[in-house]
Image 1 (cartoon, rainbow, N blue to C red):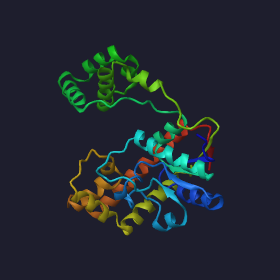
Image 2: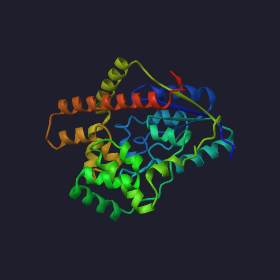
Image 3: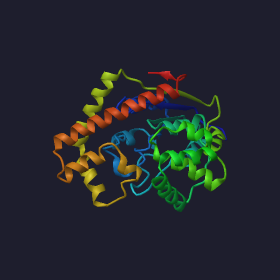
Image 4: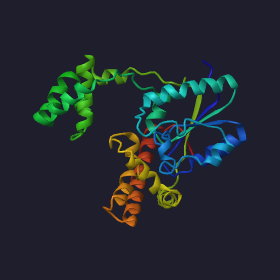
Length: 289
């Protein structure tokens, strides 16, 4: 399919990438498309710092707030959602700005991600029991027989990834390493340009702290209270958003509001640091802003 003019705008939380996208879209009649895993969720407008209702009314936005917190969107599901949007914009001749901080979304677009078959729950459950019974060393040795590269690559203590690698190998009969090597980018080379919004770290951390204070003023506690009332699984992506656990502790009278705000600020700074590191390592050739 013919794709529109595509610009990928990546960066850590609180870096100003959404503001930059608004400025670019106003000049070019582009549509802004979400590439942030938390901004997908309708329940997280405040905590994910989703574009405001006013911004969404001024400039067309897609794939923001389209998922319910009870859903678990993966990078694969996002990929299947974003490509029809790009095809639609191509037909209309409109530019696209994909904006976000989720590195794997950009990897899927520019490098590709493996289409690994789903592993049945019973397989994962069985291997979790096996891991706990055998211990990591024995579990890793058996994984090495199935996928030597994964056994070597996965860090000590990473129980989840070890179980994932062995589950894929046992269920599919093919090593996870082989699956991940078999990838095709969603976007053709030369069809896109990429830039990373990369503020000086001290300024970025100050922005993170300021943002958390604004979130409290804008209704973060009410947002978390509504999520708690639904009694959702803590393993769902929306429930792992920065601020949910911290503010939930305050609402459960386990900590003060000031302590919850401090903890959320620290968690936000840590998240921004990880994002900065990821984009520096994974997008070395992209323009820096």
